[in-house]
Length: 83
Image (cartoon, rainbow, N blue to C red; front, side, top):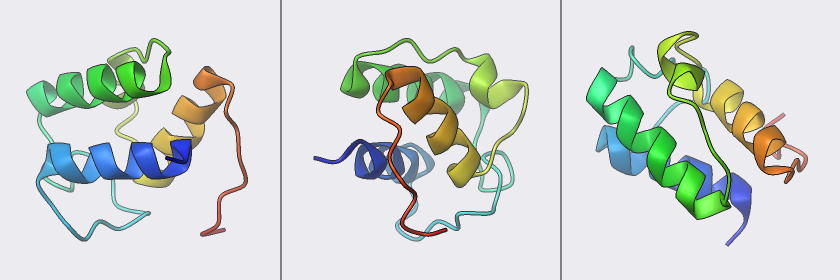
């Protein structure tokens, strides 16, 4: 599976939402601190990198921002097909 899709799928699962907007922040989408911990842990495991909890809690990123940050951490930077 493509790393881009992995991040998106985990984001959707953690937020328990099928349809997510690229430009809505994690907490505005209903995320909680506990959900942020689940998100960073699951994405990190799936991509084989450490994703710090502050990647969500400190910046309250949009899906697009979080995905770009995580893919850079994982060294799997790919072009964003939604750009």
